[in-house]
Length: 141
Image (tube, rainbow, N blue to C red; front, top):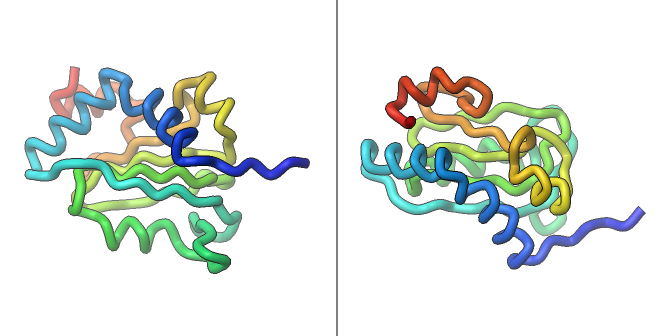
């Protein structure tokens, strides 16, 4: 089985498909305006199946939640491009978190444009990707 290695260009295409969806753009923009945040910070790493959501960093296993805690509030959204084989949840106090809910590959993300694979967590609201009523509550059409 061939191990897939992602280039920065491939990552940009994956994120382009998901982040350029109108609803996601509006959610990020509104959240940033309301909370005085701007920009997006990315984590691109190979996921590591473990009891918590982890990734490989130069041969060491790191926790995704710790990465989120370090970057929370520094940007409107934190986008994690790292397999999440067991659909582990994450939390944040300030930034929107966008992450996969399974192990995935580039072709699958491009084909589905992130639908059903990508989760979106809004602080103090929770996961909104499958709950349209929460988006209306946030004022996003």
